Length: 373
Image (cartoon, rainbow, N blue to C red; front, side, top):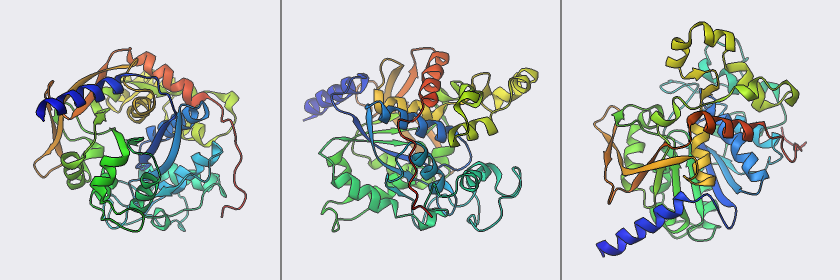
């Protein structure tokens, strides 16, 4: 039995290394859309790949609640002509409000206010809703469908072993999904449903070789439960890979794109070239460079759709949560480790250019549903 499992693991790894798919990759995209904005670049990349026939976007789910995250996702989906992609958000647990650690939810009826006001880094997403009225249905993520129902309904409808989940936020929904019971959608519990329908989970999470990484630390209990119990292969684009892989400046400076929600976010949040030159060490410390913003989330999308090759190498082992303070550690295990973490192969500058090219692509369709409220 152990030999059989090892052979299966080797075959799965070989499949992950290839970038050629006979059919479009079926993707569920899970994002916090909270303070950072590589989430926007990642979702833009995913839509560009869908326009090219490389993937099919099954759902776009938020891992945060009580904020503008779902509405922001819907604005971007609408820009790319896909306003009807299912959306959802967690209920009853996980990160809430304008930033990780916030004690209250964001009131969508409150005025937008100033960029550096009480909304903190979430201002950019509330501004999207203010600037693109009619492009979204859920100003408050709490009004969106339960992410559990969205996941279960989407997974149950897909062929066995066909779905890739790409998460670029907190691991709340992964934990909640695993803990679901059989229902009218499927008699299978969450773990069995995942094992049956999901072929791969690609996660932007964790810090190598150890530390506290934003996506995995702020709902640490969910991260621990998800990482310990997930029944399919997992590939990590971790903090170490993306921190100095920069993308987005080409989008921010692309005046010929006109006004778009994607360009608005990048142009409004990437420091100018002059600012970066004036104090490159300071901006590098905050993960900005001449190429733009650290592309943690976009690299996860590349892996989810195109595979590890030709952009990355990979190391096998186990990411696990340790202690109660949100810390994680990586345990290398070249033979039997259930996880892979990407490492550098193609230069990160070149990977950044691949990402920029995808974000710069114009949507095939820009139709926006006129019945949105």
